[in-house]
Length: 114
Image (tube, rainbow, N blue to C red):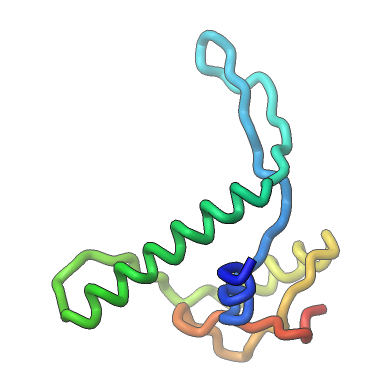
């Protein structure tokens, strides 16, 4: 829980919704989609994977080690607005959208979510 609170306070997006689980027939075609609720163990594993990735990134950055990493482009304002509208229509708390959003600065909810 402490890992989750730390990430949430750093502005991580928290989605607590069922994860889709697919069933396939003999030909590999999807025949059913069920919502699988995340258990505490699922959340713990996810938090540990994120924490491990962050630790490796810090380790490499501190040593100025050459490595490949993913660069996220600045999100398009219209797409961000559409996402916020969709989340709001589903009654998912959303933080206020900053005027200028960057991939490095996630919005922080800290009690100001709609």
